[in-house]
Amino acid sequence: MEPKLNNWPSYSEDEWWRQWATQSAGELSLLANWQHDWRQWQELLRAKVCELLDWEQQDDEVSVQLLGQKDAQGFSVQKIAFAADDGTQVAGYVCVPHANETPLPAVVISADAGVWKEAIVGLLDEGNPDAAPGSRLAARGYVVCCIDRRGCGERPRRDDSQGMWEWLGKPAVGRDAADLVRAYRVLCQRPDVRPDRIGIIGVGRGAASALYAAIVESSLYAVALCGYLTRYRALPLAPSDRERRALWELVSGTVPAGLPAHADLEDLACLIAPRPLCLFQQHEASSWQYPATEAARRITDGFSLMGEKVKLTVEIGQGPADYPGETVLRFLDDWLKL
Image (cartoon, rainbow, N blue to C red; front, side, top):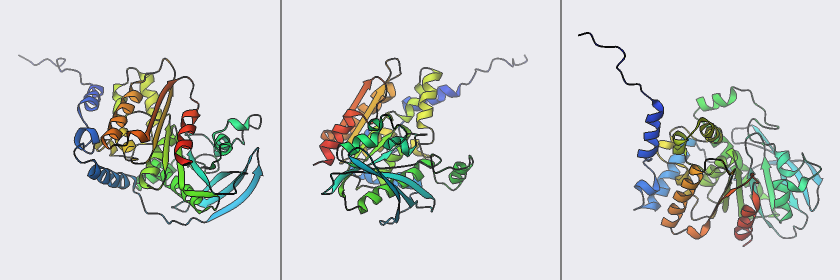
């Protein structure tokens, strides 16, 4: 009897990924494999993260140029420039409250993809500049630094430049994190800043680079991540193409190659302990909330395992995204104004 050619079962790669998402865990997953020795886990995962980012130790001193200054309501905006660790030039702004007779706490802001530094400090909305995150933080008594992401604003690049960096084994999120660490060190050098009370805020895709910056730079005192509360293993579980595309747009370019074999977002977040961490996520009522709620549960369990629950703030709400939001501002006040 001749074999039939149409009896081979169809093969769905999507089904393979769904099983991977539900039945596997990274070898350095805290909750799955390392509850018995979380101190060694932190050391191993931090070393693995530095390896995947191709992280190189940076100089403590950063040479900074002051390019100009403009007064705003209650604070001044200084435009600065400094060299990144690879020699490319970084432009940024520092907002300095007028009442700075004593050194103040400070914040580095890591903006979402496509958001210019001018929008962060209110220079693109002369009608309502106080609504900008940098303006709101400066009004609360913080020195604020924000820079252009690579490929954005005054840091243009050719379309193929990012791919060429990837050829060299330097993921985009690692290079963005390195720039944020240098911005942090710029703040450390300023006489109007308390170097022991500098935090970092990341928004959207900028939250990933803020998280990596805080992992490799342990002196960043407090970390707030807005709009990036998910799990990488949630992507294959998305119930529709719309949710899958939304998750992919969020995480694309923010996950170093090889990371999911070792860890997921909850593991990275738990590396922040014993420092304070705030996770703030806003959703539309109709959106798929499983990735955020599951990630929040796992991060909470991880902090509790390490005895650091009190230093974790989590809020998942409904409504339009307003980042950083009052939750994050209160979190910063509680920890940076000690």
